[in-house]
Length: 117
Image (cartoon, rainbow, N blue to C red; front, side, top):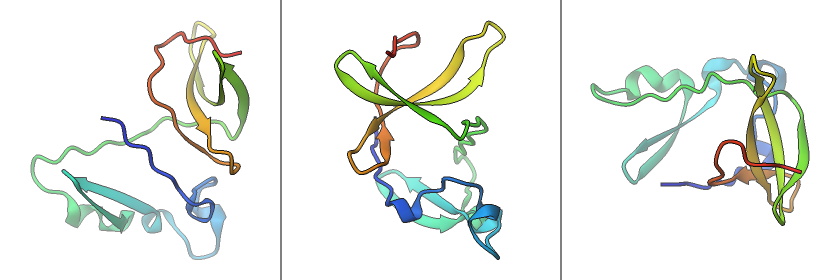
């Protein structure tokens, strides 16, 4: 299943919480909780009380560089976010679709090794 989420610019976390304003710390960042078809919004500090035995917790520890470049896959415009460079010199990247409003949205599919121009 693929889920596309549109995040308003004012809610997009483009920099770490500590840099977004005084008094905002890591425990205050937003947390999206999904239980089947039910989705609810919380703060990260609420995580301990939200977890139940048997829950799956996904933690994304990959970092993306604060840079993106425009590219093309076939005839489709994409935005490439760079994550890490492997020992073989190849990069792990995330391809995103521009939404026409200056932001991007998750891009589905695309096998490893897809050529981006």
